[in-house]
Image (tube, rainbow, N blue to C red; front, top):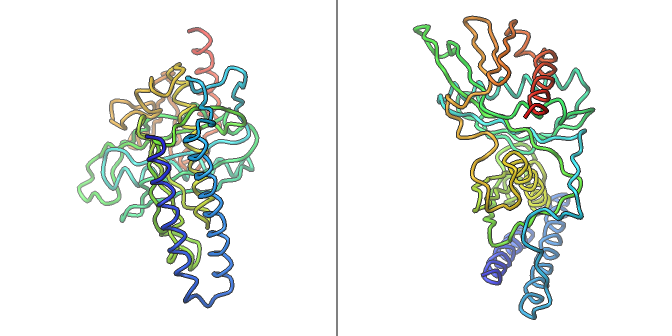
Length: 326
């Protein structure tokens, strides 16, 4: 089974190598030639590593890790100064996408006041100007500690800009805050990974139009999907996707208190149904309510422009207190 997966992966890499070599035949740009050659070199290295692994398995010299994802002798360490923010539109059509965009902007503006650095790894927008999915790495003082309780379904009640009759709509967006793991040993089997490679549709110059650098990774046992397109080289996006996958699996394991990947049943943010909400943003009544700690705040305009210091502080304090009393 594992050998079959490795053979399939090697063939996929060989296809990518051939595509890049075909590009070189007609390419005139010196910069593009250097980029493609670097990508070929990286792919050749990956191919060699996979071939070596397959040879070791066939010869019986490759030792598989023990059952159980986390090595007891290697306690995972969360880097409090780094986190991965993922915002996705939920139920509500285009309005859900617009709300997802507003949520990301809210966190970004707050981050600016804290001198946090945002790096967007993946952005997928809808036709209305909203966001289907956005994944960003954040770096700064106490990022994970401050944002970790923002994960969940956020619900909005407001009149969309496209609504001519003034009717209030209810939509949702999901937020996931993932830790950056310094040291962790999770057993992710290669045969459980499905890779897709495609051309980026965003920034990046001519490279995005000629080379399949963007990556979509699916972990079949859990259904977790990870995307990365920020880097200009496929190899780097592959590495980044695996890094994010590790963080997602670790977070789910911690949330559900399980010791094995096969025990995972649900994701960090649920299914994005309106009933799963952790917080509601009610625009007509100028009210933000967190349903976990039963607390309400006002001044919606300021909040959506990044003035969320009090909300974050109150949420962390109350959630930590609830955690201690369990």
